[in-house]
Each structure stands twice: as structure tokens, then as C-alpha cells.
Amino acid sequence: MLWCRCCEARTEIQATLSCFTVRWTTLSLQAHFLKNLSYVDATNVFVAGHSAGGTLTQLVSMMSVEFRAAASFSGSPDQQSFCHEWADIVPFDINNVEEIRVRSPLRFPASVHCPLFLYAGVEETNYVQINQSLASQAQKVGSPVTFTKVTGNHYSALKFEFPKRHSTFQVIIGAPN
Image (cartoon, rainbow, N blue to C red; front, side, top):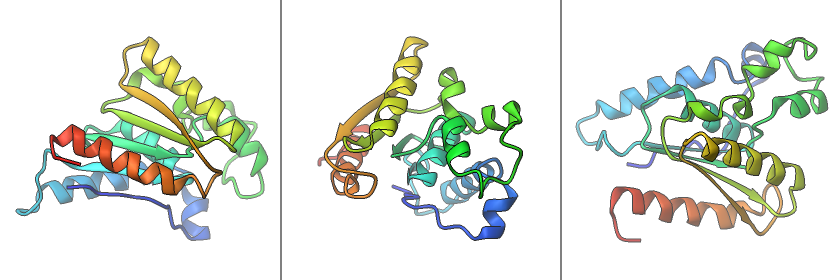
């Protein structure tokens, strides 16, 4: 079973309420629900996300044991730069270091519970660098994180990232491509 959270749709109210901290719980609860459906192979529930959904995917891979593997497309593992760039929509004081830290997957490379596959387009220089950094730090502490750079920008890279995610997840479950 592939459960894919490709793009995070949100309302202003939802964005104001959490900026990631509540949503990972929702994803874990949804995975738990899926695993209890009679027609779902509970050992093969995956999560994937793009952009804000990619960051959420990184966080949930560190906070939940519900997923077999996770794929993050152009997620932002360092909320310091992201929150300062988007300060007008961030629902907390961006000068509060702890608020930034708890939302930054880069700060918790040893916390990954399942294989985490990070992707970014070559034209997204900042995303490439920061996701490479997360993968490198995670690998140094033995966490199962890999980074792949693909052709494209924040959106055009998706057409190259999705097939890679699909084939990787197929290999994990032992299915033919």
C-alpha cells in the first residue's frame, strides 16, 4: 500500500495553528487507521510529500514508527532560513530559537525511524545543499537517509522524483518495477 501525501493543501487557519507541529500527529493517526483496514497490507504503508508536505514527511519519519519508508520532495529541513524568508505567514515568533528548532528536521538526524529518501531539483540550489546536509549528518549517525538530485526546479523536478520514489518503494516491498 502506498499512501502518498504529495502536496500539502492547507487553509490559512490550519497554517496559523501549527506550522508542522500538529500535522505530523494527524499523519500518524491516518497511517494507524489505514493499517487497521482489512484490505491494507499494514507492513507497507509509506508517506511522501512535496515542499511543505516534504518537510512534514521528514518530520513524521522522525516522530512516527507507522511508516515503512518516506520520500521528501524539496522539503526544507532547516526552518531557520525558511521562516525568515516567509516571516509574514509564520504563526510564531521567528526570534524564538526553540520554535525554529522543533520544526527543523536538520536538528534531529539521529531520530529517523524508517528509510528516508530526500529529493531536490538541481535548480533549487538551497534545497539541494540543505537536503544533502541532512542526508550526510544522518548517515554519519547511522540513520537510513539518502539524497538524490534530479533535473528541474521546485515543481518541474516532480516528474523525475515521482518515478524514483515509486521504484524505490517497489524495491522495499520486493515487488517488480
